[in-house]
Length: 211
Image (cartoon, rainbow, N blue to C red):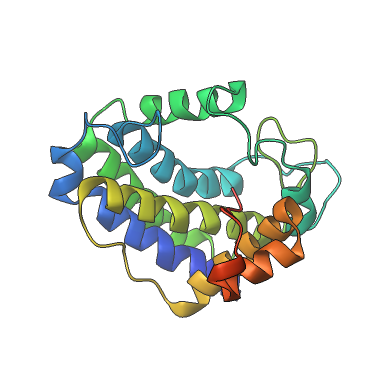
């Protein structure tokens, strides 16, 4: 199994456990730590990242041009977009829909998907993957890494939203995500701003947020 797939499975397992936490169910109808997202919608969006990988293995292979993961993020028009952008509204609506059966059902579906992926993902052949709305495709391993970023970031969002500790993940998984976020931040803010944000608080810009 490739390292990217193992990192995703580690993060997805931790996310599924978080989704099953009683604190998530207790705060289900409350606002989350993300603007305009309820805890329910955020939980649905987090779980969807696991479902996306399962669905990528089960669906037909994409035919679109393959780009690198860094090129994909360079082309992503949603990065830095407004909360009321149609893309972001769609993300929130889908999160609510994915969680419509309630916290227990969502957690069970996520756990079942992780169990399926533990069998299917390690041996899956390389293939092109394209999600709806994409004009390009990624290799399976790059697609898995893109979902790793989402799982790690949104696991922290959900944990913060319900007052529990962020799941501990292997250093390699977190480092992969931080590397991706750093490269996105450099494209958004410039290398000097990111350098100062990471090393010189007295000269740091107000934000070097990647997303």
